[in-house]
Amino acid sequence: MADTQYYEGLGRRKESTARVRLHTGGSGNMFMVNDKPLNEYFSRGTDQSQISKPLQVTGTAGRFDVTVKVSGGGVTGQAGAVRLGIARALLKADPEYRKLLREHGLLTRDSRAKERKKPGLKRARKAPQYTKR
Image (cartoon, rainbow, N blue to C red):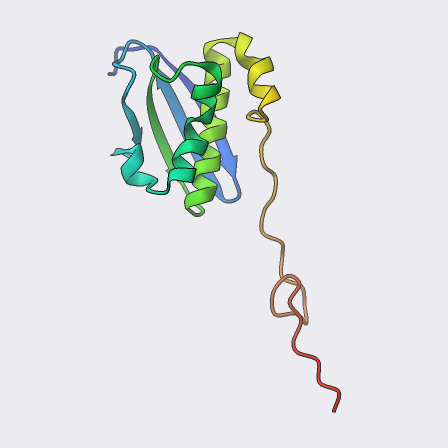
């Protein structure tokens, strides 16, 4: 697959980073994440549907072979990073998709991250139990 053209997109979510490549000229049904098939790496159905949403929205589900290198964070954060990476790569493949992807909220990075721990608290907001005496 080294001789085929590809479009690359970078996606981030929480602590996860995903490098996505959409290869043209392939069979269109290959989807590899860290050298594993999609359904093997992301076993949860909600994560799989979230990842494939940009391809379904644009109607390009069978046009590209997708390879992903993802690292950091947890499973759902990685799925969100892959989704953003796919959307950005599709935008490079065809700028006409911008309006469609924007309408479905697929080009906006989810900026929510873990809140920092505050002094005197157990977590970001959980306080020790109050005792009157």
